[in-house]
Image 1 (spheres, chains in turn cyan, blue):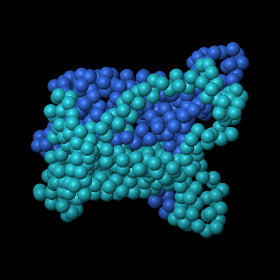
Image 2 (tube, helix red, strand yellow):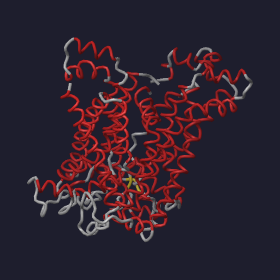
Image 3 (tube, rainbow over the protein chains, first blue to last red):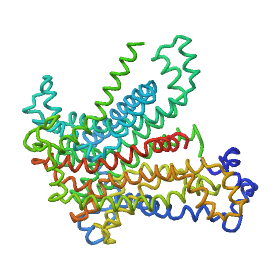
Image 4 (cartoon, rainbow over the protein chains, first blue to last red):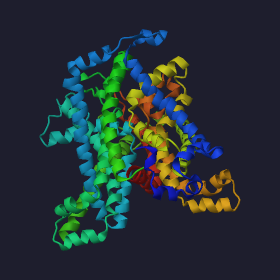
Length: 327
Length: 271
């Protein structure tokens, strides 16, 4: 992943650079404004991202090694306590029994459902006539456009204990008793509602990306498979899936990253803001410890744990990307 | 043949129901005059604008809307400029650490807001910029930049270098070429990333919740919480507010639909 991997194709594509460049090692010494120009162009964006994304990332690690509470927030004086916050975090049975399972199981289930639903929708869209496809795509875009905040309130509205429309419907089917059922009280049903919300919000990205991939599969390949007598199921696993493997890899990893750090959709549900500790995930736990309990040190340690998990997934994502196409 | 078209029809119907039902329910409840009196019907008996007038009047939502609009427009304008300059740098120049910069831009997108909100809150508090809309613009700018640069880079790279060279042959300076050749050609990409930045800023919840103490500074995402209570939720008002928040985003999404998906695919798949 170093500078040296730039291909000939890329260099010729940026013809101007290639014409004046000469051999690579000498390039950095090329004096004058041309060498500085990319950095001048990059400077404002790098400053903003460095100051508001990279620096805080270092700060959160520092804070996680400190005893940082309300008093320290007011006085500005902090004391180092080494890995005490991490020791407390990793020694907390809640982490292993509640928070990690909530985070991981939810992410796995939500990602699986999002990718399966999105792929099925893409396969359906690819078989529609252009007009119908346009209409359905627009409907999907509308679902995608619903902000997380308002979408969450609609799902909460549907599942309100007692008179929520979905609760009533489940009662009519004999699956629950509307008079007593509270979908937000138990962990399983709480996260079932959250999963519906997240899948509804997340599948459009998968569907439209996979559809774009499907349209690049040459017609002849599909026809050849049909001539060979392959059914739809067989065609998908033997032709479509192998050809679109990188597309599936990317949507899966991106969905995993998004679903791992889901916050708003959980926090806004009844009890999700820390009132019901049984439904905390890593994101909401970190936030609640920091801003409700004023234990910024411990909250930072939880946030670091979440970031490390995401970093591992991201590295996997980058390796997938680079295998396919380089920068 | 007929069975398969029946299957397709059912699939489309089910899909439309799943995607549009929550949206439908939101809008219908916003117009339901008895939404708070236990009437949770799919088709209100009492159609009314009262929820909207309440939300915009007593609810103070007009103020939240203008706050959000201000923050989002600030983010879009600053973001478009910064992202375009950076995208030109990484798409048109080969320079040392270029790959490192690109990898950093990719990696930084995964940083969870939960990890950033703690240090930034402490920092903003000590600098005394909590409770300011400008502070939110700066934060949202940082959030929207990585994606905008990554996507715009694809659009810039798609502009043939020959066009730039033609401009130079005609005696144009780099600045003139940028303004008269490159900018018009990447305009569609700029529209797509601007829409995305707008939506990022308009929808953001965590920072608006943490930074804004004074109700006058609430953005729509946080202002909506006023109608939601553990025991007494004003569903008519909540859904009217939700509708007001969602409509502009939907309009933007549908307008930018094609470009946005092209950009996503270019950014996500081709790199």
